Length: 95
Image 1 (cartoon, rainbow, N blue to C red):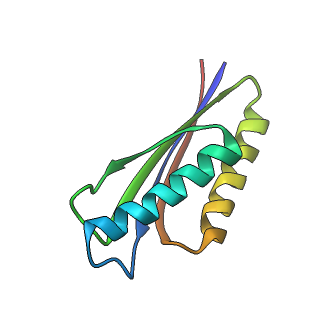
Image 2 (cartoon, rainbow, N blue to C red):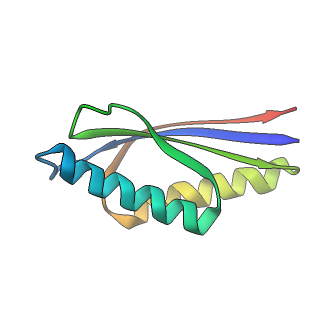
């Protein structure tokens, strides 16, 4: 079994409140969940309205396929244009 985990840190330039941040984060999380069927949630910077951290996890049986899915996920999130990706942390673990 192979597990892929990741953490994406975003900068939200146009957010002036937690309500507008929530709208953007919810949109990103929903679109990623629908397209890639991953476990994903906001995991940090909950009270900072111009920064967000989203964590995700994938499980599979092939390391190359998992790596490809994680790359496609990052490209898709970047292409949405809702927030600027300022940091990523990806890890693939063989169990």
